[in-house]
Image (tube, rainbow, N blue to C red; front, side, top):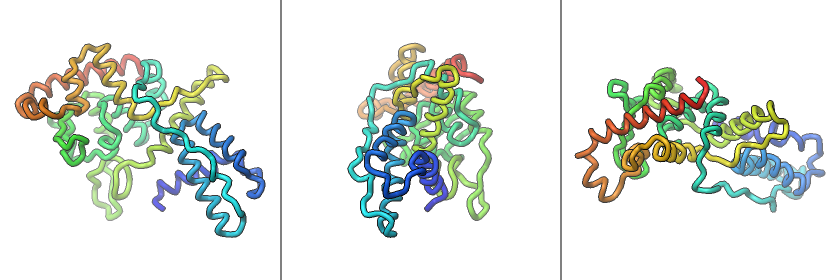
Length: 288
C-alpha cells in the first residue's frame, strides 16, 4: 500500500474502531458495527463513516480468510449518502470556524487556497509550480486540468500568493525537485477523506470547549467552499455574475466562443479586483 493509504486504514482501525477493541472478534456483531458507524457519521460525517466501513469490512474479510471468523459483521450495514444538498454553503460564522482550526500543514494550506480562490480541490491539490506565475500573480490551469477543457487563468490575491510562496520545493525519490506543489511521490495531494474527517473532529472539539453539548458543523463538503465563494461574492460583495462565472471557470458554450479570448484581459482585471475584495472579506471574518 502507499504510505498515505496505509496511514488512513491504520487510523480507521486503531482510532475510529477503538471502542470495538475490548471485544473478541466473535463477539462483534452487526449491531455493534452499525452503532459505531452511526457514531462516526455523527461526529465526522458520512464520508468518514463509509471509509471506516470499508476498512472494517476488509479487516473482517481477512479474519475470515485466516480462520478467525465465519461471518463478516460489516455485511448488511448501510452506507451513508455522501451527496448531501447541492445548495449547501457555509455561513460567515462557519467559514470562520473552519479557518480557525486549519493548520499550517499541506491540507490546511490547500483548504485556505480553496477558500481564497474558489477552485476545485483537484485543481489546487494537483497544482504545479509550472502553473503558477508569480510575475503576473496568477495561476494558469491548462485545458487538461480543467473540467471544461479550457485554459483557466486565475489572478492571485496577495493572501493566496503568500500561501504558495511559503511552500517548500519538495523532492522526488531521485532527489529532483517536484513540479507538483502538494503531495508526495508521483501524484498530487491525496488522503482527502481522512484529512476532512480529522478537520471535522477538530471543529467539534473546539465547539465543545464552550458547550459540552455542542453538535458538529452541519454536513458539508470541501466543494461547498466553492459555492460559498460564489454566493458571497454575488450577494454580499456585488460581484457581477459573469465575473463570478469566470473565476469559477464556469464560462462555456456561446459566451466562451465569443468572449473567451477577446475579453480575457478585461476579465482578468475584474477577476483580480473581485478576488482581492473576497480575500479582504475573508480576512475580516477570520483570525489572522
